Length: 492
Image (cartoon, rainbow, N blue to C red; front, side, top):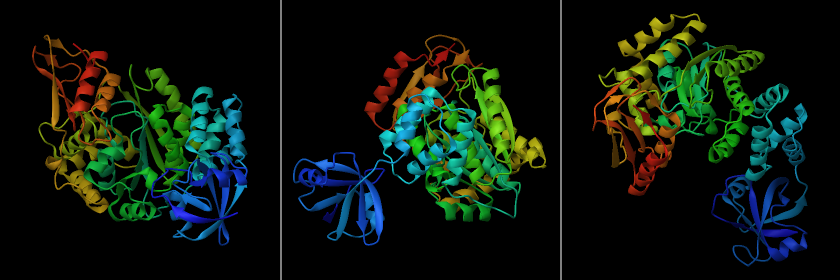
């Protein structure tokens, strides 16, 4: 049947969505969420059908198209397309197979990843795959094949003039914004570090969220490559670069579920690093009672898997297992973490020493891997101001948002958490800190979060401030303060 196109000016996310009225859908034998093929001129587009029970938003003889589908086909409003039923992708059967607890083969995983990348399956169907992988786990072969599929279905950044180095932290520790220090340190030493980073999955801020306070992170493939060649490094959001694009769709699903399946984590990291043709790769695995790895031994076991997978894909991979028992840095949340980073680079008196020390340690390891000067060279870039100059180059190249970090706006609604007794801080609950910061609005509200005044080992005097909560509106601040009753953030 042929239909007149009507543009529904709303974004559906993905996959492509089209709408028919109930009478037209019945004539075609279609139901809500059925697949359809839309033919315009000589091209065919796949979409998922929604059905309107009334003559709004579409009437008889019309097909409504949400933004993504309409823009992909082109400016066809008022034009005509042909619509026909389509079979469900074969990948749906493979997802069900994984839900039933069976292992998938290489072809089946590739089909799932292709259909995620090409928007042939819905968010709901992708969620089933993510959940099945989380509940049933991935075998070693499945993890390798998932990594290969993610690489194969995306683009690759290739650099020939200089050595490419990269790093990744598995997360789980609030703050810990070492990447934003490592990139300028490494780039100022003459190596290339094209860093793609994700937005937050389970934390109050991801590297991309924090860098976005200072500069544009939606760079795209060509711009990211040009900036890296020009200044030696960049910090970009991976979702705009088309490197292992299925991974970014999976991350979107993981975020509301607050899950990070081990097999998908391994495949996600190694696929992104292989896609930027990294020669040397350092994986940071923090461990602690509130981290993803609870003990040094569990961190070591995960590290062995990263090492095996990274080397399988031809990268010189090294693992470092670090203390994740408390937050790193003072700021928790995009704006506060960005301020921490810039203070370290400017060597201010109130810069968080723990953040600087860890960044220099990791950067030193990376420089050693590339045959350079190690920790001394890494530290010298900070003290001499070379890392600061390089960071400003990167910020300017990506598109500066603030003239200086002192201009960064924090939430106007503030609550100080006051010590009720004297003592010394024994532990800080990472999970509690993260949940309170997220309740205050982080990471979507860049100015929301927590500033830690006290760290483990610090003495506490009664009525001193332990930490300060920032929120951009009063309701979210109230919500964060309520979390204080449910979580014991400080033990002192």
